[in-house]
Image (tube, rainbow, N blue to C red; front, top):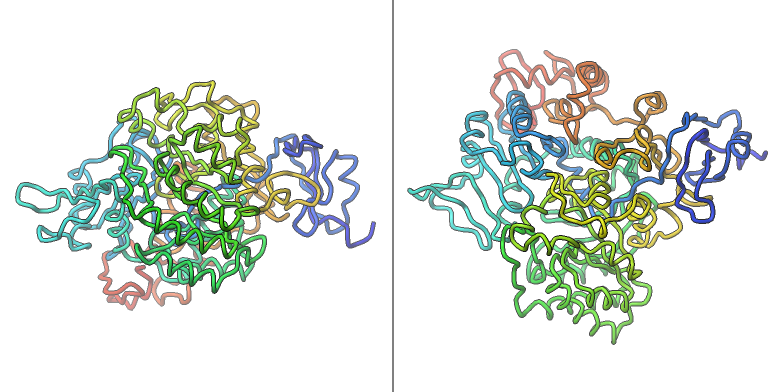
Length: 630
C-alpha cells in the first residue's frame, strides 16, 4: 500500500453505530489525516495497518459518532471553568455543602468560591437550596456566589461586602435585591425575569489571568471529552465581547490544542447598539472564517435585546415591547444582506410568532435560500409557527432546559402544558431541521447524557415525568439529535455527526452500551475513549494508556477542578490515587511562569497557609514565598 494512504489510526473489534444509513454498522475503522479512510469489518480494515499505524483493540465495545452540542457557551465557560465549583450531578445538598466547605478552606483571599449554575434544587434529595445562614456559617470570610439557573443568586455576607451592595444600592431594572426590615441586602438576588443583575454581580468577581484562562479552557474541553463531546456550537453570551474574549480560544486553536471543535456565533452586548455591532462585525469578519476546529457560524443567540424573552418559569412570561419588530428587522436585514445565518433565543411562541413576521417580511426582499437560520429553545412553539419556520427553510435548536426547570413550568402552567414542551417529536414528524444541546454552563449542565436521558425518558433530573412516552424519542432518534442532525446548524452536513468514509474522524466509546443499558443509567454515562480528528483526546480505564494529550494540572492550585473534577464531583469519587497523580503532575509541569524559592512549584501548600495576599498576581510572605494567590 502506498505510504500516502497508510492509516494513522485503526480501531477494531468494536460495535460501531455509524448512523450512516448506507452502512449502519461496522466493527473497525481506519483514520488518515483526521478523516475516516475506511469503515467496515476487521478483515477489511486491520490489514491496512502500516508500521507507524496506531492500532487499538476496542474489545467488543459500542462506538458512537462524537457528540455535538448545538448550543453551549464553551468559550465563556472555558475562561472560568477552573474557578467554578460545579454542583452539576451532585445528588444531595449535604454533599454539595460539604464540597463548598472544603473549597472554602483552600481558597485564598481575595478569591471567591462560585457555583455558577448547571444544577437545580430539584436534583437534591432535600429538594431545596441552601439558606443564607448556612452559607454564612460555612464561609464567614470567603465570598460565596451561587447562581441557581437564571432565576436567582445567593451571596453570603462576605460576597455582599466584596460587590459593595448596601442599603443605598438602587434596585436593578428587571431584577430585585432582597432586603431585610432595615433595607439592607440579605444576599438573595432575583431575576424578575431579567437576569442582568445576576450577570452583572458575577462579573464583579476576580478573573483568571490569561495564562490560567488558557489552562482553564483546556480543562473544560477535557471535561467535555470525558463525556464524549467532540464538537460544539458556541452561542456567545453576556459579557462575552468580540474579539477580546475570543483571544484565548484563538491562541489554543493556533497552537493546535483544541480538543473540541467550535463553531461560534456572535452575540451583541449592548441594548440599542445591536445594529452598530452587526454592521461592524459583518464588515470585519467573514462567515465560516477559520477551519474545522474553530470557525465563524454567524450571529446570535442575542440579536436584539428588545426580543429577549428570558426563560425563568418561576416568573410570568415577559411581554416584548412594541419596538421589538423594528429593532429586529434592522439587524436581520444586515445579516441577510451579508449572507450571515443567525440563531435567535426565543422561549415562547408569542416571541417566535412576532419574529417570524419580521423574517417573512425581510425574506420577500432578500431571499433566505441557503441561510441556515434557526430559533433556540422554543419550549412553547406552536404547530403554526413550525410550519412557518419550515416554509422559510429554518430550524429549531432545542436544549434540555426543561430537565432542570420542568417542575417550575408545571407549577405555573400545569402538567398538561408540559407534555410537549418543547414538542420535539412533533417537529421531527414535520420534517423541520431540529437538533439537541444543553445551553450550558449556567441554565443547565454541559452533560450530554442528561440531555439524551431527558429526550428518551421525559423525566427531569429531579425525577418528575413531564413528557409522556408518546412524546419521547427512541434511542437512535435521540442520538441523531446529538450527532447527525446538529451538522445542519453549522452547515457541515455530511462532514460530521456520522461515521462515514471521508467525514471528520470524531467518535466516542461510552462506558456502557447506549442501546442496551437501562434507561435510568443513561444519564450516568461517561466516555472510555474519545477521538477528535483521528487523535485520542481522552482515555480512561483500559484505554488510559492511549491518552497522551491531557493538559497540565488545573491552575491555580486552589482550583476546584483539582479536587472535584467536574460533573458529579467525579475526581473526588475516584479517590486519593488520582489526586496524588494530579499533585505529582503539578510539581513536574504546573505550567506557571516561575517557581517559588520556598515551595518550588508546590503552590497549593502555600495557598493553604494563612499568609497575607495583597494582589492578584503574587504574594510575599515572611519567608519570601512567591506562590500565586490568583
